[in-house]
Length: 291
Image 1: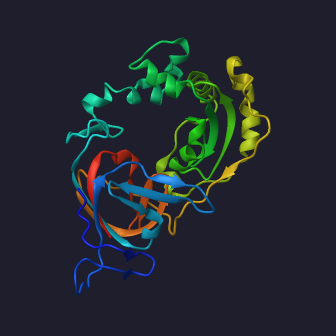
Image 2 (image 1 turned 60 degrees about the vertical axis):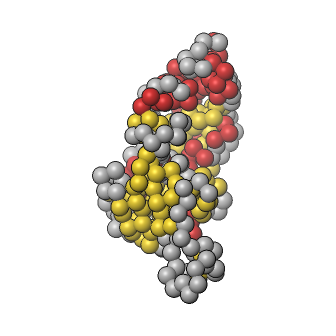
Image 3 (image 1 turned 180 degrees about the vertical axis):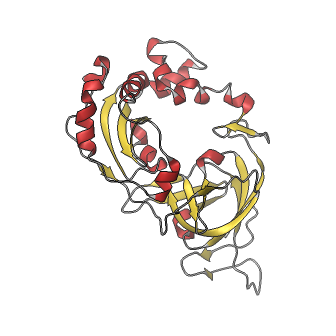
């Protein structure tokens, strides 16, 4: 349910353009909705958007603004019931039942749709697994290997907070991408250090050189899909100040938080007091957002 109290507020000038209350002096807006990962738009600087059911917020406009987050309850992203979230925004029963939470999501090498073998729902699994996939290198806290659907480039890199990335293999299904990732992570990391990423404690890397170095380890089944000639993609995040010692906010333990937003990187909100809040890992929480 939307509980917005005031409307038509200009974030850039702090001017209340129109109010449904006469003689209003306090310029506040309050939204309520279930958290889902922020949508992004790449450009000279990445734009972030938060969908709060009936409202669509450009989060970049909240930089340098004081905002409050308040935990209210839970809402499973699948069944939409008020049930405690287990993983990935789903309640426990949905997580172990729905096809979009199958083990092959996190472990693409377990994909079997190319063999016409069902895990939970073959039709759904074919619709996802039998599409072009990219194996990539990204530099967020260090050089890492990862897998994503081709349609998720560069969204996947943005979500991981990578300031540079490059495609190394484009394969026709998720399984081939998965076995390539398994082979390459013997020689390069496959995880991001979120603290290092948020501190921006990273160095530029020559990802083209890394691509050539790792080519020898690509499985024979995927080697024909190696990308010979391409260049790095560079990403610029809207951050005014990076935290020296980021501390993670847990809204379930600290249900009310207020602070000045000074940056957005990956799926994290960064506050002036060095508190950081991961929207993605809190999907399924119903919150109110006061600006």
